[in-house]
Image 1 (tube, rainbow, N blue to C red):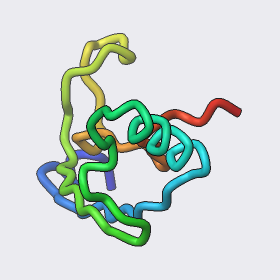
Image 2: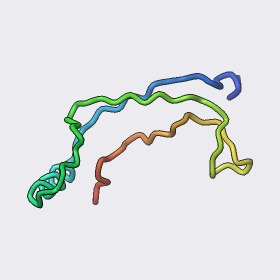
Image 3: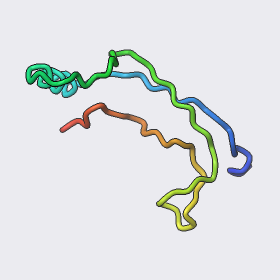
Length: 85
């Protein structure tokens, strides 16, 4: 089997939200300064689903300018505010 066999296949990536101590500190700082909230209604334990499609897409890391990968690319871990340590 090669990559062509999976072209146009779809999959769902499901991520569960877990806030960090840094998120809580930044949120409190925003509230103290009277600024808008940064959590957009996201609560610990919330899920999001991202549909990906497999294909030969344009990229900047392949010599030919295209490679086989799932798009959109999704990191294993994502952060609302990138942790400082």
